[in-house]
Length: 279
Ligand SMILES: Cc1cc2nc3c(=O)[nH]c(=O)nc-3n(C[C@H](O)[C@H](O)[C@H](O)COP(=O)(O)O)c2cc1C
Image (tube, rainbow, N blue to C red; front, side, top):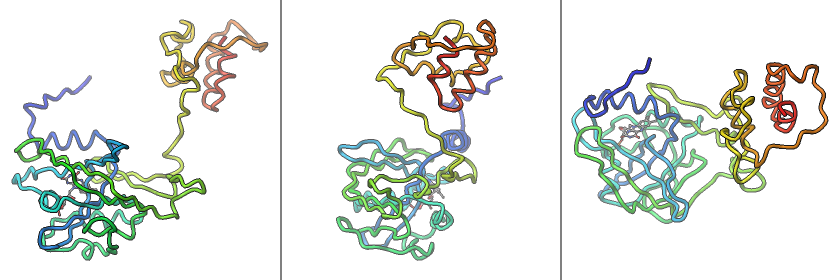
């Protein structure tokens, strides 16, 4: 059974739940902005991602309140002063980030409310967050309003001018280590995700530029009741089906046994051995 929802006839309050519970995990932009009077603002937005490398562009979306169709202070600020810092949210500061999301008046500084430390930015006026290991100083180049109703998003398109990275999250080769970064993500309801060793795993890039694809696998493999779609995808990520080498199985004709063995090798990342068993 499938529950199908007609988006056009669903109330925005319910759509909000379906969309934000489903599209997960989302990274969180902790956005520092200022208003015309110089009041500082710091608020989290999980409708956020990277959309371009050259130019380097991040986008987040303050949504008009579904309650009364008013807009968020952050949106008003970046319309007036088109600058912001986007800081990333780690497990260490997640509770403070959540506190900063309270609807404080526009003249309240959430750095103070959340007990976070302002650091002067180098290219723009809003300060960055000392406790966040990665801060992006950005120029807001465009704001695209997606509608006029409560729940309508406003895409704030931010060109990155400067990236500040705390060395403690860097490897020797200057790349970012996900476990040192310890980023937090947003799920639906009150759920957040951590970056633990057992929640992350690697999928090796296909060895060849173009995998043969599952459609090119021999039927005996493709129609297996033991190998899953995921197993078949690993097998089909090679450029051509390997030559059979000498390999003895107890019973060459026992397909189930072959597939069980092959599956065990795939689980250990030993694709070549899995192929040899299947050939
Ligand atoms: C982790 C987290 C993510 C959030 N993501 C969004 C979002 O993507 N868009 C949005 O409009 N509000 C989001 N909110 C709610 C805003 O942070 C909240 O409305 C805040 O009061 C806005 O502050 P401002 O009015 O000072 O801009 C989020 C809140 C939390 C805690």
